[in-house]
Length: 156
Length: 451
Image 1: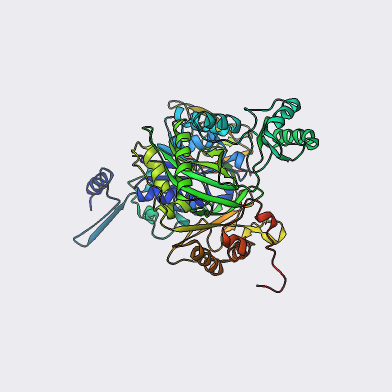
Image 2: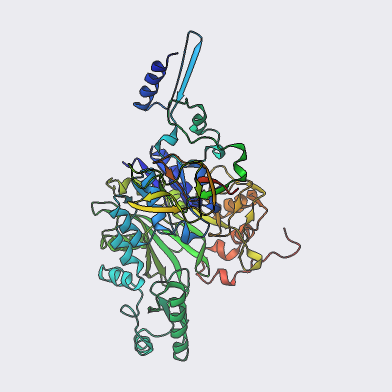
């Protein structure tokens, strides 16, 4: 199947009320499902009752809503910087500015790592450990909830 | 109609709102504290946002976090449930200012009815019978003394910002007045940050009978009859029933009419309850108004076959109410199953429910957020389930409730089920003739050999 064909199917789905679409032809099959996470969904699908369409989230093709990269195996050793509030996550102070911190950069406790905006108020979120910024766990512009992991820091 | 409702609450009422919204095709957003991560309302909502650590102040009562959650999920309405911020006029105001529809009455109606002394005055002006007493707040002991000369003992001193039985003192003779006045004010200051009190005649042998009202945006208010909530312990309701065994259709009509008048006088929108005290001569007096959906809304739903949660949402969205003839067709009883130990002064019994089985069947309804393996957090109220039965007569309903309670299995924690079973087979309860002092005098402790 060509990428342009797949893109067409995804657009079709997005512009309709259909939640899931499966097409099979000439021995090839494609299944595209609506990811509720594309509408700022914080859901915990893993623990939801089985009848829930949240299961569909696992069938998403890569071209649709991109999710944050899966945490690496060693993530448990890293220090987690968590959000103290609910809001929208931004990596830089403004759209044109540089990000507060790059992956691989040395960071210090007290240093601003990001903004979580809520109701037009820009809340600067500070790092609470010294070390190397290993991973950014949230995509820029995405909503975050209380206690959600924002960054992984290697304290060395 | 709303596209998405954020439920600013938890537990069984959050689940109830989610059920109503789902049936209406409305998306739901659950908010939760870290203690409620595994709660059913979180699992059954379309979306869920963690808003804070376990303490209510930092989660369910935290307005900035609630508003941020509504913002990031694009909710267009908020359902406040009961308790928490449901009767907080500031919260209703903030919702309005943020372009969110607060599913409930206006901020001003909430404020008016939330101030007990002001509420009483408002009702009196609307022609609703009120308990005789002080005209508003009592400034000092001297004023209190003067009032008792008119009202006569016994009287009760009540905190204007109070609730749940706190900041109240009964006074039977003049010698008790000074001490009672000081301690009531002090308790009110501590519990509600407001020491202001008012005085009322203390109604002896009262029954608590409340009227369910519903108002729309066009000035129409209807009522769905009464609920008798006389079975109370320390002013906490344990059992509710409808119809009240103490009233006739005539009294129902009169109370309903008074309640409607009272609600209309504050342009009431949505679901509300007007609580009355019924004295031994069947005269009724306004006590207070609850400007929210109540725990026991289920009783009214079963008696009158009406979905009150859906109706709340519909009127908030602009639906017009039709006239209602409150003629009960069934007898309905509800028992609140709390995680409390009735043998040890009803002390809370949080912990893990290791086995759970609810009764079911014809005329049996269970509203709950509990499930097998659920860990009850210790941070919130102890209500874990509401058991509601419906039958043709009161006698049958009591028996049906007894059998439903027998089938109700909860292991791992203590519950009030044994208390309710005793109650259903108690002669006085069965007679329907009792007042609010009944539970205080009810001997329900489990004797060692009995099961």
